[in-house]
Length: 218
Length: 218
DNA sequence: TGTACATCAGTGAACGCGCGTTCACTGATGTAC
DNA sequence: TGTACATCAGTGAACGCGCGTTCACTGATGTAC
Image 1 (cartoon, rainbow over the protein chains, first blue to last red):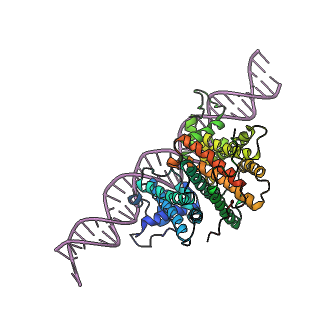
Image 2: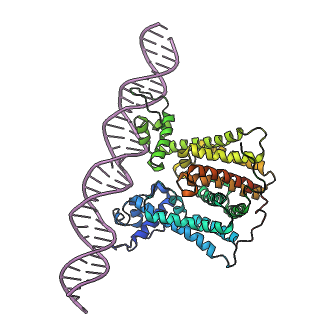
Image 3: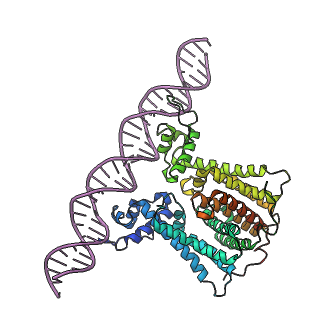
């Protein structure tokens, strides 16, 4: 229950747009992404069911704004983690911090994380959403470029993919409750998260294919 | 349109259960997971809207069966990929093949892949679903144990997490249309997928933290 | 081989529900003079 | 400082829609004799 309800007896809510976005998060956490509706959001905020339309147009508009906010927060979380490093931190530490920022976002914004990758729910033509998506990509690209400055197109693509997919996959599977005893209890999950990032950072620094080149895979 | 419609003029469909599961896949691909309803499935199969209940109970039951089928197919795809290796293939090749089997499943069963991890849509108390989920985990655990036989609990957990999360994250992001030019056009995606698996296999073989140990990350 | 009957599989009308959307409205706020 | 009025923000009734669920039903199939 983080959505701010309308004060009793007041006609104007004052921050309805913000409150409706918070209500989306509440519903996602309480019931799941499919339970989000304009009427349920309005109900949680304590406002008439038709009050949302002027702010977001329709449900897709509301979810698009929610996803946009998620991408902006994600980008900020990664930048914050890098900014919190000591000034003399090296490129390795910056890449690791970027990954940790990604995980921190997923932990602190579980509802955003679960909805923002659902492209079927979003208006992909929305320019604000597109820009936020772009913005969320930049910190990883920068950190990786610093970590493996010599990587060419193909080697760089492989390393960007490894880092992004591994961190995202870990957060996504966790968000859906997967993993079982592999990632439970919570302090084990934290340990795994640290080790995962260390493995990624080290793997990205390897020569192509690692010290032992793989034989052709049939 | 893979769902088999009921023959005209026939009263019995003959394979309604199978056809309804296929209809789920059709709808997921055509519109998205949220568009799946019992009535829409029945409509696509050409059957009365109340015909599905005896087979699956309700929508959640249908989706649970669909997810169960997905996990079984996933396990089979990984086993098939390993079985297709030459008899003298080493543990590295077996781990790589397991990852390739996972990717092949996601490519060949995109609708299953998008729905089977949506725990909010599934009846998690269903024992068939639970068993299929277990079964889908075994091939990776076996392949990794063969690849890094000396790994203890913590090091093994980190490597299982890296392999699973990276391959899953790659497939999940691709399924949602993410990645942009990083993974497009299609032959570039195939190249990235091969490199990703090579990186994972090599990274799992590294000593802890890689050749250069990471400094503490603040 | 043929008939009777039990069982199975799907039908279609009815119900109540929550949804998104529309629209005339009203209360609250801010600005001009 | 006070009054008039325009604009803004939210209301609530009404509508039609697709949904899941129920239930008496009917056509098709299979089995017993």
